[in-house]
Every structure is written in C-alpha cells, then in structure tokens.
Length: 432
Image (tube, rainbow, N blue to C red; front, side):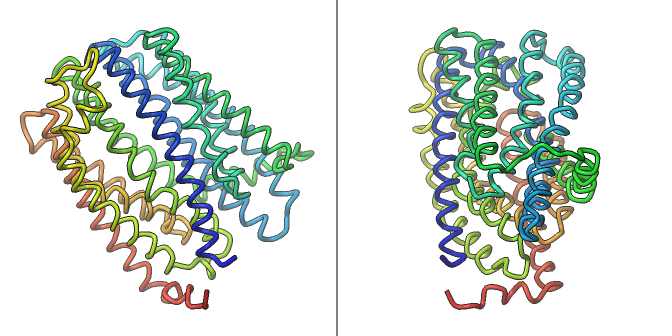
C-alpha cells in the first residue's frame, strides 16, 4: 500500500473517532445549555474546565508528540525492547509529574478565580484530579499512535464527554458533570492500557534510571518548545473566556457554548491529516512526502472555506437548533449566533495552523509553531485593548484577527523552510 493510501486509511480512522467525540461533546453542550443556560453555575463550570483543558494540552506537549518522535525512531531502528521500556518509563514519569501539576493548578485556580468568579472548591478539586489521569492518557495515546492504533488512541474525548453527559443526565448539577468527566477519562485509560499491554507495546524496565534519562532528554529536546506553544495556545483559548466573565453573568458560559461548536470543526478535517502524517514524517524525513502535506492542506482549506461561509450564513439557525431550549433563551441564541458567525470567518486559518504543527515538528522546527501560537496570544491581547468596550462581539473579532495574522506568518515560515530544505519539494516524486 503506497503512502497516500496509508495516510487516507488512517486519516479515516482518526476522522471517525473525532466525529464520534464531537457528536458526544455537542450533545453534552446542548444538554448542559438546556439545564443551566447562561447562569452563574454555567459560568463556574466553563471556567473550572480550563484546568483539565490546559493540563491535557501541557501533557500532550511534553509527552504526546515527543514520545511519538523518539519511540518511532527506536522502532525504525529495530529497537523494540528499548521502545517498550521508553514508553513504560514515560507513563510513570507523566503520572508523577502531573500529580504535582494538578495540586499546583488547584491551589492557583482557587486564588485566581476568587478574584474573578467564585467557583466551589469541591468542583475545582474534582477537575484537578483529572490532571494526572490526562497525563497518563497522553503517553498511552502516543503509544497507540506510534503503532497505528489511531481510533483507540482517540478514545479520551469520546469517553470523557460520554461520562460527563451521563453524569448530568443522572444528577443534573455541575459537580456530576465534572465527576462524569473524570470517570470517562479513567475508562479511557483502562481501555488504552489493556490494548497496549496485550500487544506488548509497554514493558517493565529493569533499568528505569536509564529509560527515564532517555525520556527526560527527549522531553527537553523536543518538549520544551511544544510545552511553551501549548501553554500559550491555552492561554489564548482561555483569555476570551476569562474576560467574558467581566461582561455580564452568563457571558463566559455563552462564549464556551459557541467555542465548543467552532473549535470542534477543524479536528474533524485538518487534525486527522496532521495526526496521521506526523508519525510517518518522524520515522523517515527523507520519505516524508511533503507533497502529501501540501495536498492535505489544500484539500482541508477547500473544505473549510465553503464551511466557513455556511457557518457564517446559517449561524442563527444553527444556534437556535442546537441550544434554544430549557434555560437557554431566545436572547441567548441571538447573542450566541453573533459570536459564532464572527468566529467562522477564521475557520480556514485555524485549520491551517493545526495542520502545520505536524510539518514544523517533524522537520525539527517546533519553535516555529510555538512562535505562531505566541503571535495568536499577543494579537488577541492587543485587539481586546483596541476594540473597546469589551463585549462578546469584540472578543470574537479579536480572535478572528489574531488567527489570520498569525497564520500568514506561519505560511511564510513554511515557505522559508522549503527553501532551506529543497529536497522536501521532491520527496514525493516517486510514482504511486
């Protein structure tokens, strides 16, 4: 099977997992909006969920991409035993490290949110408990991706949102949603661990010291720029949410509902291609098929642009259909539709940024992607100051502007990368 067919097959599996996860996530958002609308409780839950979202982003930056890179390299060199020991050591390190991160985030969030919007300590405690679980999932996901188990490697979102949905159906309160989310993450860990153990992808190491040394070296070499980039990305994602809490009660919840719809779209279209391309590029750069990367980008953009137009045009109907029931009023629908229609303008830019992560990282330029994310944050902070007074509309305009400007710089960086590495232009010249 040639490279393009392999990419297409695995991309279909990732897409299927993302579609299922997105559907469950939207079902949860619809049920949550029906129950809590734009109330203070909804604001509290939206803000509290920043903790697991940021933690998962950080653990993915430290472990997911670097582990795929190094484990893929070991497997390419026929070092199966070293690869399994490396993966086992990564799991142990991720659990220990992010247990401490979870405790730290709990303490910091109690202090910060006390200044903005009081959130129950019990809710913050539950969501903080998910942090080490999500870190373990990052390594297990990387393990399964390295061995081409792409569907099961995307089980986290499916199980976590399914657990949260079941939680609010059984007990309609925000604590049940958080507990259900945690239970779903634990179920995903159990499933992925069973698959990894059954296929002997991880093994107990007789020399954990040496294996951990390899893990730490790999993290410092590849994880640092990705960690910074991920931290900046989630600061960029969370900044409008935090600013929205100062607009009026329910504004943070309203933003989170619309963001759930908007940010769900690129993973369905561009993330699968980038996820599948990365392990291939990491194994052998010379056969990395940069032509396939450009083709995937063109295909994704050709889908995202019409989708952006549709989303902009039909945003009022979409929001009304999805959310306007129960505690979510008609005025909430009108305000939400305005946010979603503005965000839709930047849909192609967001998709391109996600796809280019695979290219920058696989070709040893992770700082370029981190730089793109820094520009996102800087420009959204700048525009929120320029577009005064701060409303949900000006927040959406700030996000749109920052995405397009940062994407332009990102594409210029890709062009320079190709000029520095001219062999990449012809790496896909072999006949299919």
